[in-house]
Amino acid sequence: MYMKKFIIVLFIVAGFLQTFGQAKKPTLMIVPADIYCTRANFTMEFDNQGSKVVLPDYKKTMQNDENMRLVITKIQSMFVDRGFPLKNLEAELKKLEKESAELAMMTSKTSGSSIAESPIDILKRTAKADIILDIDFAVKKNGPQKYITFNLQGLDAYTSKAIANAAGAGKPSSAAQTEILLEEAVLSHLDNFQAQLMAHFEDLFANGREVICKIKVWDSSPVNLETEFGDDELNKHIDDWFAKNTVKGRYNQADASESMMNFDQVRIPLYDEKGKALDTKNWLNELRKVLKKEPYNTEAKLYLKGLGEAWLIIGEK
Image 1 (cartoon, one colour):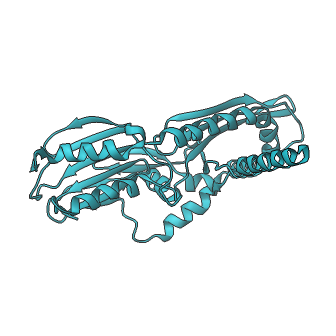
Image 2 (cartoon, helix red, strand yellow; image 1 turned 60 degrees about the horizontal axis):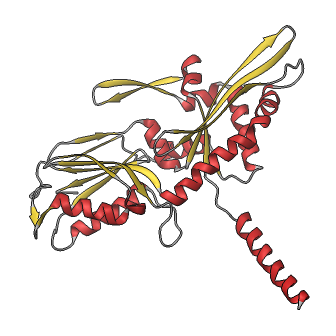
């Protein structure tokens, strides 16, 4: 009897360990911090519908800054050793260059409305990492010795909110290379930094990923958000859909009119029913399918702006 209970306990423990070992971890992508790129003059100008915006130029940084390239490689290896899946920045940049059909702007043939997307938004949308690790560092000298100061920040790729941070300085050395100095400086902070990343990811599992959704109407649309279907206007039908399809009904309707509805703090599931990662575009596409059917019979254009923001534009594709 004792042996039978012992075997049952072993099976339970083994099952727990297997589940724990297979626990999903967030996908990471490591990029140079904006402040680092600006300091080194690795920047580009982005024309956002007539307004010039200065952004970090990751390609220029990786091609011209050997220290940053080595530092990113070292941080990647540290997180790979801890079982985190990673997206490689250089590989993602090359992938973007090969996508000749990639558009920075979409225009409706009928209404002439336009949508602008920054190069950084395009990169995040293509890579689809859960968390961006933002690294800034500097090599400093103390007599014949040198040491490194660093600031490593974890950003939610969908909201750009800071969710983890580690900063400090390493011990001076007269022989060690930059990446070794960084490893020694970061290691003492890594356990706490990883715990912050995982706490955020576990919150996403429990409460959903936070995104932004915007409903718009083309000028040429035969319906608007105040058009009535049954006893309610279209905006009420859409709001009901959000209530039913968000995690725990969590979302906020920030603004609304006859031609637009803005939703923020929208919590969508991390994975769909088949266990496939769910992004903002795929989630909002389900609303597009609903609007295409009876009683609405309405076409809509779905557009992913960045990674954590999707627009559904009603009236045409």
